[in-house]
Structure formats: C-alpha cells, structure tokens
Image 1 (cartoon, rainbow, N blue to C red):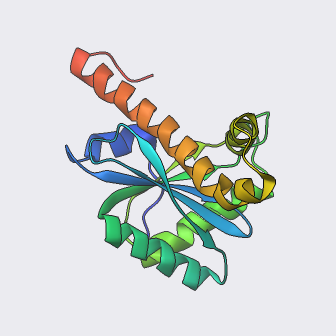
Image 2: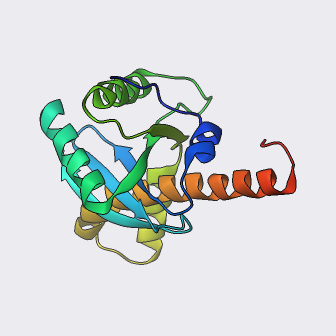
Length: 167
C-alpha cells in the first residue's frame, strides 16, 4: 500500500487539530529528525540516526513515528539552487516511495535549500565547536526544514479561515 507524497496544502487539509509532525533531513550517512509540538508551532531537534540498510533506516524512522505518535513526515527535498532535481532529489524521492510501502504515515516534501548552511552558520556564530556541530547539525537542519513547513501550514490554515485561497 504505497501512497504518493502529498502537497503541503493537501496535508494541511487532512491534519487533525492536534498532531505532531516529524521533520526529516535525509543525508547519505545520517538522518536528522526533528519533532513539532502537538499544536505545530515549534520544531525541536530530536535525534540523528546513522544510515545503514534501507530496511533498518525505515524501521528506525517508523519507531520514532510510533514513539511520538506523529501524524506525518516532512522530508527535506534537496533541490538545486535553480530549483532543478539532481541525483540527491531522486534518492530522496526513492526513499519516500520505498518508505511508503512499509509505513502508512503521510509524507510531504519541503524545499531544504540552504538548511544545512544556515544552521552551520548559526552554530559557528554561537561559537559551537566543530565536533559539537558535527553531532547536532543534521537534527538541527531537520528542525529548520520542519519549522519552514510549520510556518507554511500556519499560513495555509489562516488563509482558509479568512476565505483566501492558499498561495
């Protein structure tokens, strides 16, 4: 039972009043995860998982979904600067497709351009050591991705309440 990733507007239409979302920064060596509060206002870095085989990665992700009773995943889509889709986007889309075959949790993508760079600069500005940055960057990038999606979801909800169509 494989479901295609949803547009954020479609996910917004099906969200219960109170439900957590998990943000995912899918790297080649790690998977950074972040968690929203139930009112979907704030994204908090959660954990960084080490990548292994797909099945193990998917099981670890599913375990976090169950543990925090998350309603959906927001997966960062690593688009090129010009908006194009390269090998990393194809790999991310393949991960989402394969994950959907194993877990029914809805998935939406969020443009993750600049997420790691923004987080890295913020950590450097706060004088975080290189070793500590390596430990936290992926889950913080996931929080940056998730926060962007949460902010957009809030705008969609506001537009729907005011009768405006989502942009």
